[in-house]
Amino acid sequence: MKWPGLWMALALAVGCGDTEGDTAGQFVAFTDHFRPFRNWTRLDVGSEPLEGHPPGPRFVYINQPNPPAGGDYPVGTIIVKSVEPSANFSDWELFAMVKRGGSYNVNGAVGWEYFILGMSTAGVPVILSRGLNPTDLHGYGGGGATTQTQGCNGCHGTAAGTSFDHILSLAIRPGATRP
Image 1 (cartoon, rainbow, N blue to C red):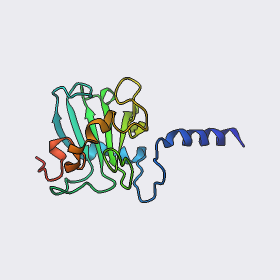
Image 2 (cartoon, rainbow, N blue to C red; image 1 turned 90 degrees about the horizontal axis):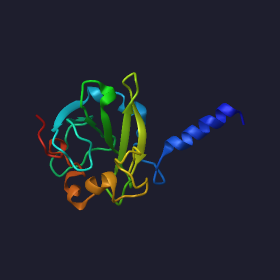
Image 3 (cartoon, helix red, strand yellow; image 1 turned 120 degrees about the vertical axis):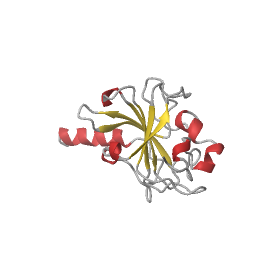
């Protein structure tokens, strides 16, 4: 095997992350799916302290309209939450939920996969971590890819979240009217 092929195989294996088995019928997000997020609907979701989240003004970017009350977001929905302490995107902290569908995350926020994103110097979002409980290795998230009761699932995956397709932000819950 040639060395470049070996490195490519290793990069692909490391980048695959937690797939929870068969992905047939699921939407598996890659970096290119996040590229246009700054062109999506942007909503201010506050700046008050929020347990488990970094401080600062928070915004949600979403690629789909809200479903009707009692409905669920379709597979392929991408929600990016940003903490934007300045206009300089290199200062932003980015988190995302993607409606993967199928039986993904069956013991948590059913169908949803979580992401921690970063921004390249060119302003392109890149996936830093993904799965059931991604971690940035700095205290956000944690617990490892197979933990479904901590990190993101600790709040989004609760029984209380089921009524709203595991969406906690009032502005984008099913049935909510956007400003």
